[in-house]
Length: 149
Image (cartoon, rainbow, N blue to C red):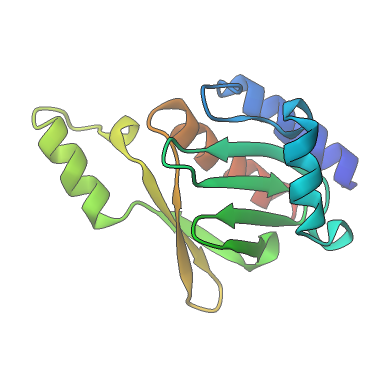
């Protein structure tokens, strides 16, 4: 698949899962100033086409591109899509959700942190807003990983 086909496919999936939200948007809908600043900080030929930005109320964000993820917390980290092995919910998120909703079995809408595991054994935690952003990002990444195979 070409980058444009991947962008179209993932964008449609993002909209299906509720984009835009309070903190998350399709990349094309972001301000020109944000896009210029972001594009200055990456090599766009290596990053691919930016598709969607997921933000968090704490100021952290990540951008899904056709070739890489950009994760901004204290610093900007770039992750090649091919290096992603999978995702997991940290134990701390399970415990926090259990305290917030002790009588519910399915607590996935209470999570805010998702761990992305790399093939080399390293990992990075990303912050996502509860509910639609968290759930949507998870499914968008599954779609993107399948498209990149």
